[in-house]
Image (tube, helix red, strand yellow):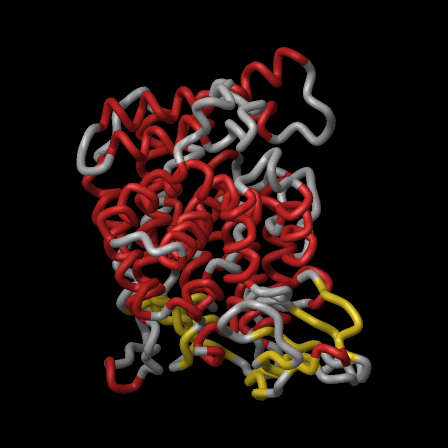
Length: 440
């Protein structure tokens, strides 16, 4: 059974939890969410009969097997389950729709318990550390999850009209920096983790990973990487002051909406300055200038004589790349190759030409995590590599020419002459970050 089916069910369960907090059980929105969750659960369990999901040490397991992508994408749900002392969930097939609702309501804190003889049972099975498949990249995944949590907490504090604790962000960035420097290729692959439901948080962490990698490539030391990591992690925090309908507007913004959007760099910089702490001034500068453009024609306006700070210009490149390659509620994701072309076209205007060149060299024509289709019809994922151009790249066969999605990808070099097209994860039917452990 693929991790994708587990993630599909967990997305449905998350929707049940949301609807259950808004409406009574008989409401059509709740029933529709339950219908989808029931279908996805049966598709996940299949002919197995029953299955156990385990939460252990900030990671999610299916029986004894690690689910690396789900561990990151559903970190918030796992944290809520841990608050309610849930260590394992056993799902019996066929699972009752009422039991799915009770489970979602329990996670949401609406109900106090689940029926002991139901088809969803809690803490019936436990496993020791020795029995679970531990990942060599556990520290990197924990650092990613901590960074998501840090920016999520800061954003929610600001939304309540409160300040935020910058030392939490500092600790998260320090951990992310250490982990990314220890496994740079795996960190870049981890940046392909996307969450449509929490776009702002995951985009911020991915931008930070890319910025730390680019800063390291251009020769910056750890003292410089800390404010870059902080500024990139918090670069969009000012969007908390922008109305959601403006942020999610699918078409062209009117003048009033555009003025609202243009305020977010200033709002973010002010919040960071108010928080204070190590590197906060440079971090605030990055948040203030990440849309200023290399030629000074962006917002806020910066004169040609005083270009945006080099750290701001560095983050702007990484911000654009991740934003283009991430699906939004109103826009389809583009391929990594397309994102690189946008950066190339914007050299000298939007972006610092030197930093764009280094970024493209770092990522390569087909960045780590790219999904490529070859002349045989196979889909291969580009493994961590040194960037630049090459006739052959390390990769993994993920989907066969016959359309079979491999549970365990097979190492297979990617010959550039045989590449037909680059494929989006949504079209390929799998996410590259789900294969992080194999690629490492």
